[in-house]
Amino acid sequence: MNETISKILSNLEDQLKFIDLEQDDTIKCAELSIDVSRKALDKLKATMLKHKFRSQGEEIIFFKKTKPKFLAPLIYHLKVYKIESRKPNGSDKIRRKYLLNELDKLKHYFDSNLDFYRYYRTQSNYLDHKYFLRGKYDIRLTVDSFFFEADDTPKYVALKFLSKNSEF
Figure (cartoon, rainbow, N blue to C red):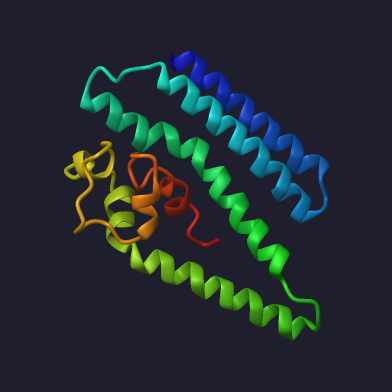
């Protein structure tokens, strides 16, 4: 199974690099990258539906280390697409104001989830059983409503990317 996942990830990374090199238009690049990322995530999900985790430790590793590698590019490119496609026409001052406002929104999101970022960045594991096991959510750890909309997967599978790239 690890070999299959590695191949899917390698293919995703290759396709994203190719898109980045070949596409000059930021919005088009984001669109293509979203499509490629979604397809890779679908392949990962199909692979994992055939697999039963042998232990909670294996499940934690998957949701803490593996799935973020697939979900992070999707989140990133969705955010780029959203910001770029809504960017107003007008003077540099208007565009700068818009981008600073978007940056404030991102900063607010990171500030709202600071406890988790600190937990993840310090490579802690004492709450892994709450953050990275399906069906083990704890309302005291839940910040965003999207957690309840997920397909019974841990809330924080993509935040590895966000915690490493918080300057975005």
